[in-house]
Length: 97
Image (cartoon, rainbow, N blue to C red; front, side, top):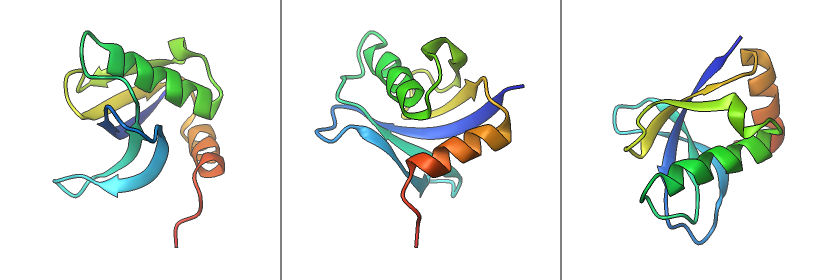
């Protein structure tokens, strides 16, 4: 089973990392992902996949960009059950409040 995760990517960040959750322009919730790579020749997409895979402890091949390959807003297919992805993200992100 796979899960779909909406993310918003910031490239050329001096502070790479994952989170927090943000609302996009249309009001949809997306996870913020910051990478140091520039958005050229797919290097930022590769950096996003590598960072997220390391953060949630899965292989890079278990993550696929299914929408938004050339956009800041992306949808990723992740080879984890929804509940397991949610558990790993909660462990990764600080509690909101």
